[in-house]
Image (cartoon, rainbow, N blue to C red; front, side, top):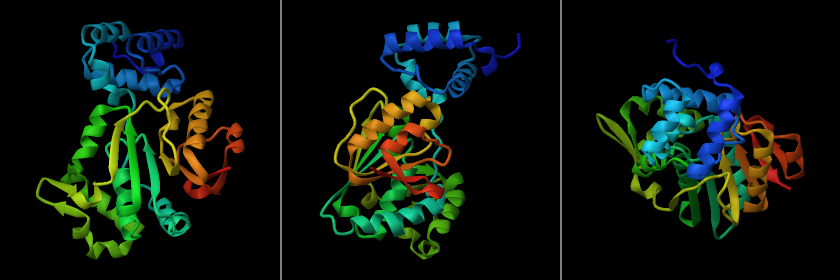
Length: 277
């Protein structure tokens, strides 16, 4: 039998699957971008050595924890330390100076994945002497990703890639790496001083209540999985979460619906930074 591919999953099969998942587990995938979700289902079926979606659903029914344990196969978490360095430069030199006189800051990283993005932010805040006055909320639907993020330790194989991105963001950090990282033969870790102000929470961006009094919201390359209606639902949450004049930073592959112009205005289109209206 030929292996299952995403184009062999019909929309009717996908609708039945997402409806059943929502009813059984309370996780709503009904408005996720169809092609991305189908590819995720194929990844999970292949990893579990199953034959089709019926076998996958049977496995979910037999093991209630399976969906949560393997949700990363459905939603690929793509993140890197200082990914898109020019965006971090714009945040450092243009966005953050607007908050320099604030007595406190609140930053929400929605869909924080394995933590590289939020640790990029804590390094940036440390550079600006703002880390001690900043409260960071890091959320993700995946408990596995959150567990990895809390560890603040990454495989050594990623070090050169991440170091090059960091140096693209700020070449002068090359002589100060030991102020941020501890590197050994097998891994590298974020130093504890950079992890103290982070509140890690499992959070369903679609279903759960939004956070409040945020100055910045990061949601990078998460909405690529959403259709237009779901994007607007989430964007309204971000708008409500942000203080007046707050900033929304999205991913380079994220596209905002036309309707979102009522909520956010472009601050810098090249780096996908928007400001609350």
